Image (cartoon, rainbow, N blue to C red; front, side):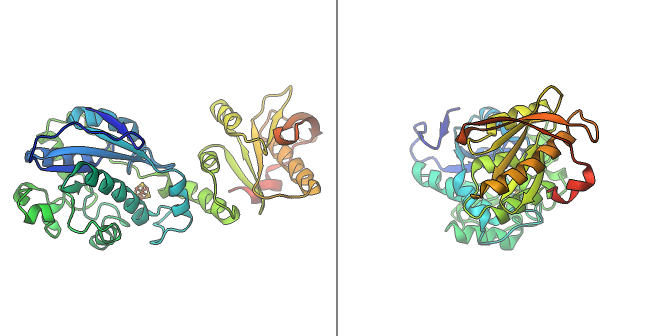
Length: 357
Ligand code: SF4
């Protein structure tokens, strides 16, 4: 196997005349089965694996780290692509809307298809294969959505979904006889029985669990994303998005947000994510969390002071403190070269519950 990234694309020399396909590969079961079904027809396959800020590779929480391992097992070359800023731009205003959470599945799949298409054209492959299963996911895997995605990427007839192919309109590789349709699958829906039967057939001893979907399908995480996109008028940064994945979040007012660490690991991450313009708050002499107070827009110092005071009181509520007693916290803001010790009481839950995101 040869690994490639989006900056450095190369591929091994192919046998003259051999049919080639590009697979959108995740570390999950479905896409690897799709590759096996096509490979066993003598077709040469290369993979493209997509990482977004919310999902390791393609769809599937937690399976992304396995994608290189899977490519090795399948003995195929792989190109990894990271969709970062451009993904956030799309997320703010997806043409085809969101699913049940903040998951813009149709636009997201289009971006993935575009990457597969680019690689297909680059290596002279005839078509793309995916592990999509008809009606497995409500937003992006129904016939209408699949054809919208194909039309939107000018890939009509060029995307073969081996697991469900017999239930779908024949694709160009099938009608041209490059692929034998009778050997393809007719799996539909959310049950994994068909996939597990195929895993047994291919001797996959420990098939990965069904993917749980990316973070954008999680209702709690979606609430944070919605809040950020509502209040950050300019483009949110990747750092803003990384912050959403950790800590307790509080919307203090339309231009400021507080994030409070929940454990040692999150405190360390908050220290790493803290930007020069953030206020970094840490209790001194008592155990307590790291917090970041972030302003999305400029505000006068009076406003900063008022919100900083509230942020300190919330931080102290999650520290080893008693009601009514005074404690010291250290506040740093690198941009102004600010480092101060500030004394305060904690506030009580009912005083800040309304700010929780
Ligand atoms: S669940 Fe939807 S938004 Fe998330 S990676 Fe899959 S297609 Fe994209």
